[in-house]
Amino acid sequence: MIKTFLATLAGSLLALAAPLAVADPIVIKFAHVVTDDTPKGRGALQFQKLVQERLAGKVKVEVYPSSTLVGDADELEALRSNRVQMLAPSVSKLNALSKALRVYDLPYLFDNLEAVKRFQRRDKSRELLGSLVTHGITGLAYWNNGGRQLSATREIHAPADLKGLTFRVESSEVLAAYYQQLGAEAVQLPFAQVYDALRTGKVQGAENPWSNLLGQKINTVQPYIVEDNHSFLTYMLITNTSFWNALPFEIRSDLEAILDEVTQSVNRDAEGINAKARERVTASGTSKILVPTPAEREAWRAAVMPLIKKYEGEVGSDVLRAAEAANRR
Ligand code: LMR
Image (cartoon, rainbow, N blue to C red; front, side, top):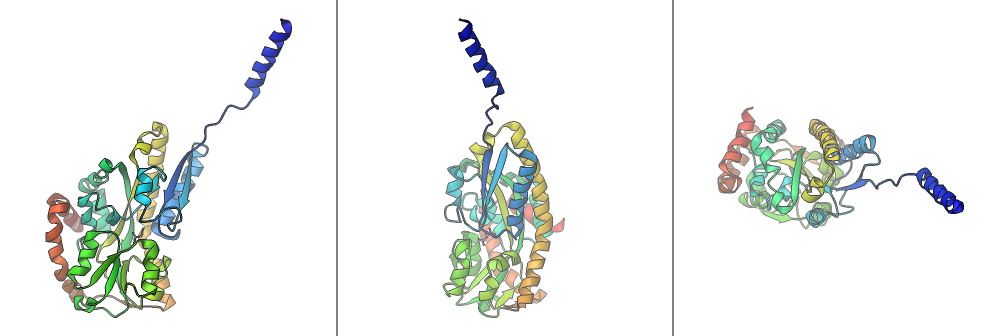
């Protein structure tokens, strides 16, 4: 009897001495298609670092750059099935799911990156972060890259110079319509295929911010780059709605606070990162950089203005007016 009692007591004491079972951290797989040294690549790494510093043991972020885990073709499906928990695709790749997001692809709508950022802070644009919820996707923030620069195998000054060329575009009807409106062809290809498509001559042109041009070595296969900023590459940081809503409240709040901080740095630093990338492309001597004169710019604008009318119904007049107003402060 006494023996049994002692054995039970010893067992209980041992159980008390054993370390408490530690729950596994919540894992957030953050996949994207660009290199680490771009606004989005750096943002993802900064997010990983801050989560490691502030939520160690509770949350772990794994970053998969350069389409190493999933790419343009399968990343949305991976997010919706919770195989990855965070992505930051270009809004162009989301605008088949939410037509109002097409506002970001309309050419010559925003005068500069500052206007894009102002628009992103306003209600009409904030509302669009929630426009994918019916697809199981929650928008958390806008991250910016920079102006899209047109690049090609031939010198380009006016719309007529595009005739006969095929351009790679993201999976966006509006981006394709831009080239068709100008008398060229457009092919939608995943980002990971852009360099090869240019190198092999499958396409003769593309459109990218400087950081992506450099990151993918696109300048080495494009002898002419027109710095026209005809539209701006904006990302939406997105997550799986069920995953996000099921996070413990405290953890979700901490992640939101970290994301606010990262979003501010990404959007503050994007312009500088692109300016440095431009310097490196210039220094590499691979490409002639053409800066359109005000008159040339006006000719491009006039040629594609019908697209604004064409897509106004889908985008919504209220969203379009809010975007235009952001040019005026
Ligand atoms: C592209 O496909 O050109 C871009 O969306 C890639 C990126 O994520 O910057």
